[in-house]
Image 1 (cartoon, rainbow, N blue to C red):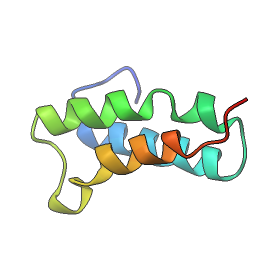
Image 2 (cartoon, rainbow, N blue to C red):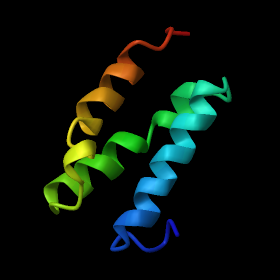
Image 3 (cartoon, one colour):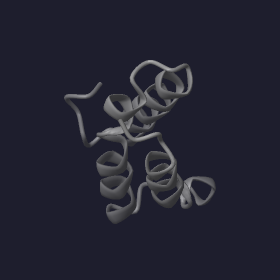
Length: 69
C-alpha cells in the first residue's frame, strides 16, 4: 500500500488510518507527520475527490491544534 504512491485509494486509506490513530491518542504528532505530505501530493496530482478537497488544510489545522510538548 504505502509503497505504491500511484494508488490514490491506498494513500487515502493510509491518511485515514493515521488520523484514526492520532484521534485515539496514539502519539498524534508522529501519526500526523506524513499525512499532509500525502494529501498535498494527491491534491497536486488531481486525485482528491470533491469531498476530500478540504483535507490538506484540515489536516494542517489539526496538527497546529495539537498540544506542544
